[in-house]
Image (tube, rainbow, N blue to C red; front, side):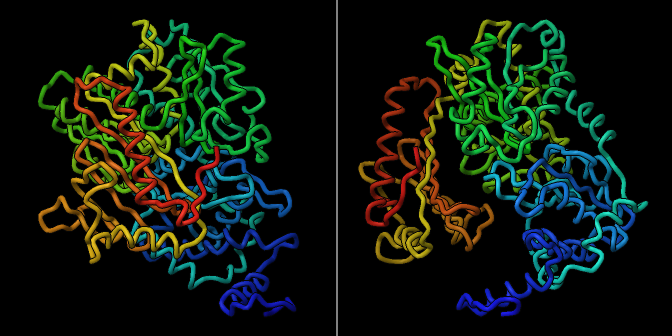
Length: 569
């Protein structure tokens, strides 16, 4: 292995390390090569778009930095811009940090070929990442992801001019879209502001935290666009800080631990609601102070139920034509709550499920919009919400302003968020969910765990018919493409043999999905009990779901036998 006297014992790995060291031009470290091999993305785009040099791309970045390497999101974005400019491709490079939703918005607004966001979202501080959007404004899916991957492999050695970011930044091919996009984005989301007078006079006090990310100034601007009073900002967390010094994980999905400073500020100011974005501001979390004085952090499914109810209510007020509802769609991922399905059945609009992840919802939304349909709302349980089709991805900035208006409206009726959620469940049926995961680093154990479920009866596709005392009514396996509910037993949703995902439906109205994570050593489970409207015995429903989860863990996960680590408390 070149430039090293040691060997890993893995010839392929040795070769990869050798190439890494050979191509590295950074005296501190070769970490940037991870981003620079994206030279291949240019080649993939050139093959896909004849007019790439006329239309160009947009590149945005968050505030992440890694001092030991000298690397940061802005530097990676500049290097990505240099790669495109070296091939004569116009680049719209933001001059300052932006939330992730600004990139897909810009792709659609300017009619560009693609968009790149340099961010690792809510990952640990040492991580960074590279998110790609296609010309339709949605995240890439097959075949584009495969095309880019192949082009990267063909262009492993960075092109000479790829490193010359300083020269690229002087190029006439470089434009700064910041001011235009800032103006147009906040103009676009105002289409979803329906109660401006209430917003202006609202006395509701709201706290907002950006968790050391980019969200602060953009959420302040979104509130201003809706004529809402500015939320109180958590001083210790409002400015971008790549060290995330006040939190263990910069992820508001983790709940109360991330929101401690927010609750303290709310108590001082007399605020009753907390809103939180993740570091790249594409996710939104919400908490409300209860009459008991305790804080309730809403799950992603619960906030999805509230926003789904609100978005449909606002749409209905704007549309008096009874037939117009047939043109309306809402979407959610298959591991998210089925509450939108229940609302759709009662109200008469369309609901569709997609695979996990907003790349699927964004692309499906684009297909529906192109057919003249209206996509009013989409969400995933991982606190991701798409409240406006001007961004075909989750957007925590517009969602924050829309949530602010919903909170202000409910306050005029003396109704809190928890009360309204109960009303939604009583009207459309209680949907109680319980999600968690186990940690497992052994791929063989994961594989055998899922294979056991596929051969439960001793032969292929002989899945369990019961789990403890609970009877199973249907099984869908998106790894193999099996679906017992379909006449031909073939799943309708796309399948992937590279990841594990099985969904069990139970006779008691329960649904449980077991799946592997694409980015972490986790086996996740998502469970929900869907009750019919009128069944409001919440205590019984929660116990039934708890018993179902216990049975799934004991019979399907077998954590002791498989040496699975439970989610850390």
